[in-house]
Image 1 (cartoon, rainbow, N blue to C red):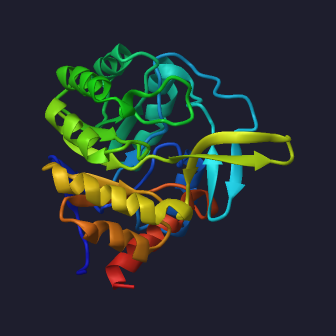
Image 2: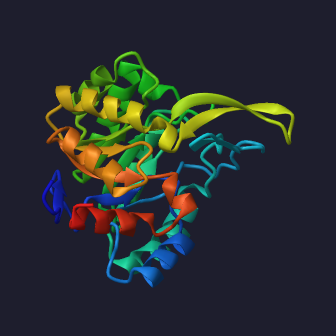
Length: 284
């Protein structure tokens, strides 16, 4: 693969095709990255998911390490839309990177409401999270009619970029991608975490949530290829990417993959995105 420069996703220009997956990036991590690699910035920042009202998240334990990855059961902890607008967005604007807002809703209409209220903010677009496996009740991404309705609601409220983040925990992810595209999505984010379960000896209980990390890479890559076969819109590939080699596999699996998102690997090394970019540029 040749060196990779700026990319376009449905009209949005990214300086490079690397971004953090929602929920895996923070301001302290961004500052560590820029201190060690001052010439690198992610192509975009996908912010931690926001809901209309504040959410405390699930009771601990909420994270458990697994071989080559982790399971999380965070439960979309966040301060709600009002806090997001007053505190979160202003803090991120200083970096001059396109901001994509990840949105979740307890009820379908909340997706459209959040988009509507953010339309006067300086954001590049929205990622509709219809696929969170660790929040009770969020099953929208497993039902075509619900996914269709949510994307349509978002589309009615904005002309900005809309990505739809799909779950791999379905029989046919291609069908769900097709539904999202037909409903008005500009791009697909694929994939979210895989449903998993593990025993936490410290708490003497099982954790059921979303598996991420290197353990899911091969399966995620297969799901991304399935999506690309049926849609005509760009795809942001993700799932276990922790090296330039991994990134190259996603970017080359199909011409529709325009960018990649790094998730769990950020927790191990906040500079990993810069290392991946350097590896892509050098051909390593």
